[in-house]
Image (cartoon, rainbow, N blue to C red):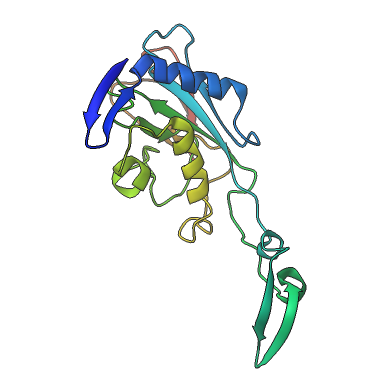
Length: 222
């Protein structure tokens, strides 16, 4: 343990590995209602660097239901005024908050380098998603466009990042954006990109390419 001195006295600084062990334990126990989760990619990784996170897209919410149970003594409706105590749900007709992300499953990669948690992890969507803070080509969450990463504090966790990204999906600038086909990964849209380093084998109107790992990908030439 390290101790830092500040204007308000000393505080204990939890070492990186202890902090990540705490996060791992919490991730294994499950978070909230299960719509956000994360875990290590390799249990043998002593540096605990590479993690996978999952977000289940937020559901549509009836705003009237969310406000149900509150009451007002005076409610303006049109040109008239209703006095007394009324349930908001009973007197207001509110449009539901629609989101294109409902029920979708998004996978992300988080990488915690040796400076974590003093510095934020790098965060990248593996599943294609259209969000204002995500690079559409790489899936990287841009720190300059995502305040939690831009204004990182040591107390923040990977759980906080995933939870905030889920919240961003319901924001006005993101909840209506057109999305790629469900379940498409970043690499799926690159399967027909031709790279000079690949060897090609022609067969009629089909061509198979073989990368250096021996993976064969086929493209149909129309």
